[in-house]
Picture 1: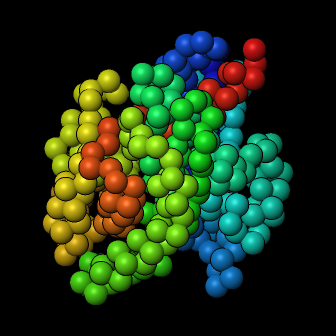
Picture 2 (picture 1 turned 180 degrees about the horizontal axis):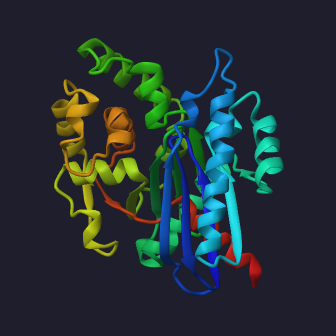
Length: 308
């Protein structure tokens, strides 16, 4: 069957259309993205403003039009940290429901982590053994660890690349002091949550998901996305550190000259590197493998599992 997944994130509204059935890998048919930066359309209290809410409804409607043109039989729609942390999130959801008919499912942090873990587990398979997954989104960082399809440890931390940029790295480019302070703050926040992972046995495999991880790997020489999802892509901690040093003094515009860095995400790739460095270092990870599946695929897989 042909399914459409609408993902409302902190940066974009993304429609993924796939052909899928239970027991098979979802095959992408088309993808449609719209830059929203919902987390930047907030007032002093953190509530989503009128422009942000109106654009969200408009973009969701656009996704529905594309999904209809592509022959989708079902639409799965969800939202993550930008909506769940907003004081007026319920009002925004009601507006989208009223204007488009789409009832966005707001995933909480642990659910987001678990679904991403499910996608990564299905991608790497059982031979990956004890699996650690590091996922850096725009609003949050998800860390999951386990032997099965349901992780034993799942945490969602407010350390997304967009959030860290907005709160800790306002300069363009940021100053050396801002970068140093951001690294210290991120490490301190993460260190408070690391105990469950330190107590667990050493993972057999470590994967990183999300656009941020893919961009960091591409900057470090990994194959471009045009080479397809089955090419092995790795990211080393030393490469992340080198990238932070390299791009720290670059403006967002200058970063777009780097491989794998798009204009919409150029402003937050430094923060993404800082979060990746802290997570890998504190978790004792010298190298990880990039997994092309993440939350959207996890939502799809859960839906297909429940159909049986």
